Length: 121
Image 1 (tube, helix red, strand yellow):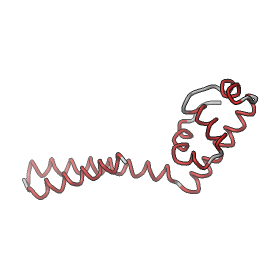
Image 2: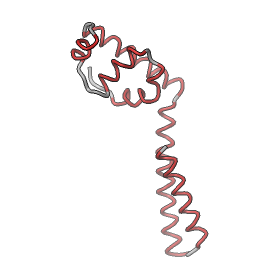
Image 3: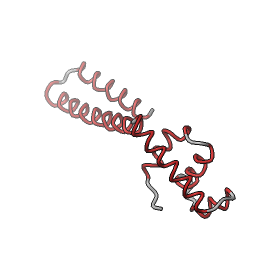
């Protein structure tokens, strides 16, 4: 079973909606990088049982994302905030080179600070 980093990302958003056992097994597999055999030994079940539980959890996480789109929206917001910062820096450079407006410089600073603060949340 090849590990899909998307599942680990979805786990951050929807992990609490899984059963405790599913969450534990999928966390051990994706975040702690344990093998199916190691998880099976730890949980006292078969390797196939672990695989089935992980596959069910992956399916549920994927379905939740398809319905709710929280992870997609998070990525879009993060990328948009990064683009806002990039464009704002271009405005600041243009202002310094041609306009020299203190108001524009102050606005640029506030925009960048706000976007960076939101991107860190």
